[in-house]
Image (cartoon, rainbow, N blue to C red; front, side, top):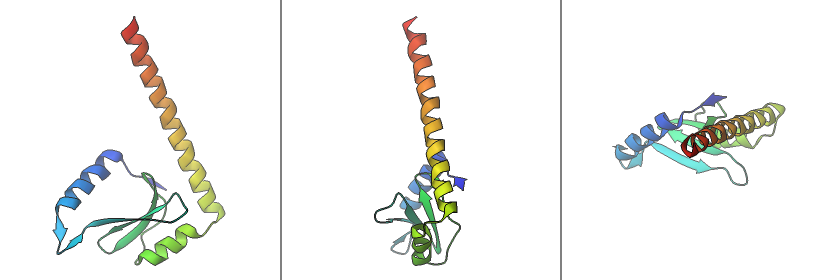
Amino acid sequence: METLTKESTSMNVEKANKQESGNKELIERYPVKESPFTVITIEDKHFGVMGEYKMTEDYKSRGECEDELRRITWNRIIQVMMVLDQIRKKDKEFDKELNNKLTTKTK
């Protein structure tokens, strides 16, 4: 599982959306129905993500990647649990920072 940083991905998305390869965008997103996953296509590579976290390796076709994301294995369950734990930790850190700033300003 690889964490994609928000800053680098958003900057790359903006750059990629501005550039075009013929009439095709460089980055395409395909939500996987009834799941928290999205297939990202960059040129000829396809990989699955959950939010900002990369969940699969690169595949040659979008269908292969989507099939892999739909396959519920113990590995996938653990990946999802780890992502949810990371999100929860980030929320706690954000809450602490916010509370510190609020208490500092009121004093």
